[in-house]
Length: 185
Image 1 (cartoon, one colour):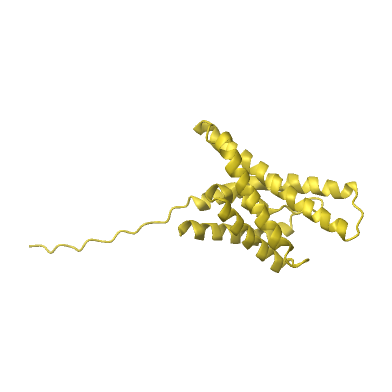
Image 2 (cartoon, rainbow, N blue to C red; image 1 turned 135 degrees about the vertical axis):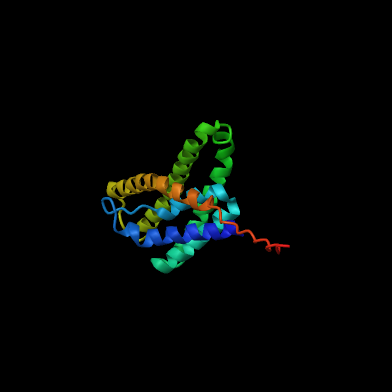
């Protein structure tokens, strides 16, 4: 139950960062996908079910916040969460567990970057298809925007992973009951 509340806290924090803070620090008009970075960081603490559920929560929140097309994010983010979890499950045993303890943190971070770039690419391809279907001719400017978004999201996953790791490993203080004082005889 504690893992659920921690994942919910990380998801809410990521949503708030995506919709407020990162709107004001775009690079060349591109905002990073903090939610994809958070999905890439959270797959270490759950399986495909948790990835899908966190993605569904992100999709629902983004549909209510942005709401360009009803249900687009609600379909897209659970797919991204599922793909991220399956990538972690398929790559992690061969890539991370076989490494020495000294190299595990670096490999975990590298795998998070790869997962984040992959699921951000899925999101951007869906948006490119949506843009094309709306009658807009795609140019190299669109491709450059996608590549910049992939790079920006790949960089932003590093602090997001550190924050997520510190929240998910947080230990709650345990209070001990005091013993009743024995009366002096």
